Length: 137
View 1 (cartoon, helix red, strand yellow):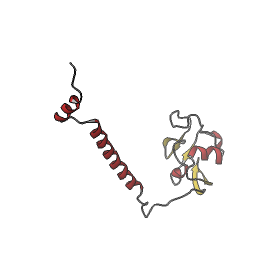
View 2 (tube, one colour; view 1 turned 90 degrees about the horizontal axis):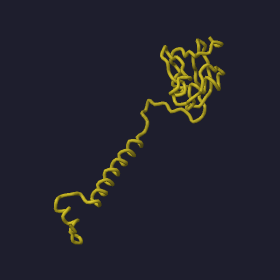
View 3 (tube, one colour; view 1 turned 120 degrees about the vertical axis):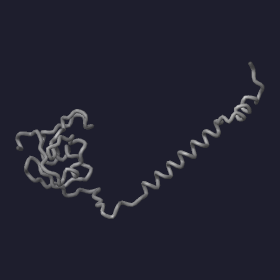
View 4 (cartoon, one colour; view 1 turned 120 degrees about the horizontal axis):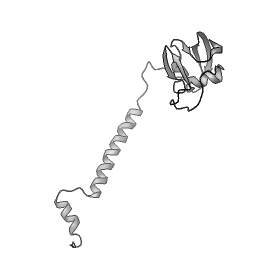
């Protein structure tokens, strides 16, 4: 069956179907509203009690295998990098750098954590961090 020219779109409009143009307008309106709300949330200032550190090096105190270590590092440095590069404790290994293999596992407060996914500054103030290196016990 052939339709007459222009007849198909008129029938769709009569049945209450959504045209392509109306669909695109609605999608643009919804996504624009979401983006505007997201920009508003990002623009909020930090809470008054929040301490901002960085981008330069800050003092970090870590208790590793029962010994207190004071080092200077950037807030973005992972615990794995601090252990291996700053403190020369090589018990935790860098293999996958995504926290999936477990070669970088250390114990913090008796709980195993992947040191490649924990910032060194987050480990500050926590209890004892134990590594698998037997030379530093």
